[in-house]
Length: 69
Image 1 (tube, rainbow, N blue to C red):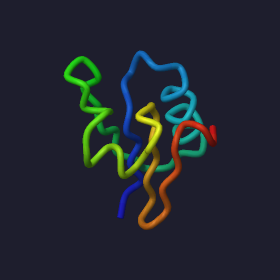
Image 2 (image 1 turned 120 degrees about the horizontal axis):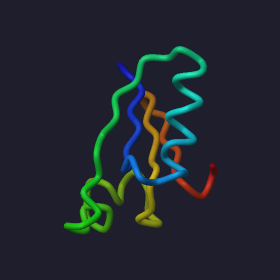
Image 3 (image 1 turned 135 degrees about the vertical axis):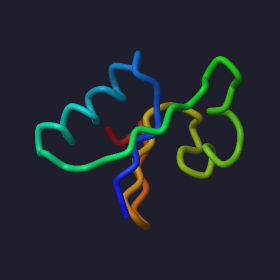
Image 4 (image 1 turned 90 degrees about the horizontal axis):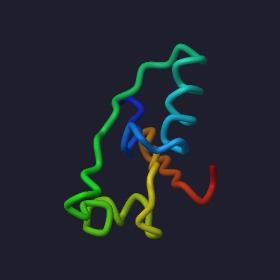
């Protein structure tokens, strides 16, 4: 299963996570979160990050979110 990074390209916090994955040469999938339509405040995103903030990170059963970065 691939690593997934949920966020938006304009978020510096999201790009920090993406930069680390690129630097480590890891394969990952970027999942765009449409914040203009408040997708970050709805399920299923809230199950990844209960604070409704980007980024959220998934690697199999491991889920990390913005307050940890």
